[in-house]
Length: 220
Image (cartoon, rainbow, N blue to C red; front, top):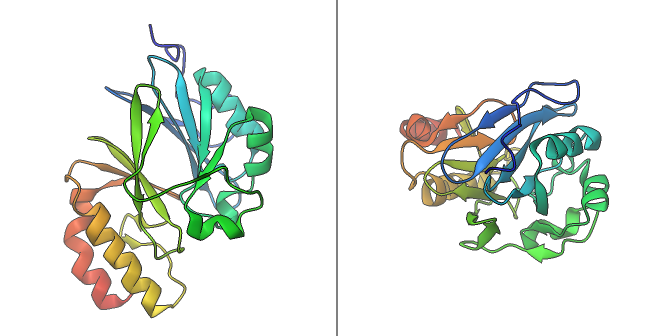
């Protein structure tokens, strides 16, 4: 029996409603927190209850409440990148859960705490009986990564949104880098893969891929 069967997709604490992605393989829960409406994701194996927190951006009580509501045993905290709006609840969450923190080494120096695990492109992160594959997708930040749940979703951080890549702050080299990351690591995925970004609504790979030439032409 799934340990997470009692979960309801509404929040256990007041705030934006949480969205549950049920189905075969890994389950995921999305909810927005903080001034910039950052998306936090819980991803877990429903058979074992083991899971991870992706981007604890703010509101640690909300995050920990959703973990408890979903009956997840968190085994790691994962970061898509190290920007401050994605790590505001980091200290409190890892102190409470006492689990390792994982990020790409290129963003390790800007974090408020030292990471325990350094992620590499292609690495598989165990999540119960399943796993998330690390895709190094730099451009928005040097250590930007996306996490692929095979056949279903990619948690893209601030690399890919509906309508374009994440902000590269007017840096032409960074823009070329993020476009390359999207082409090489994300647009090689199947059309049906759901893109779960660091802010805002979801999209799909198939919806975004035809817009690439437009993004390159406009330069952002």
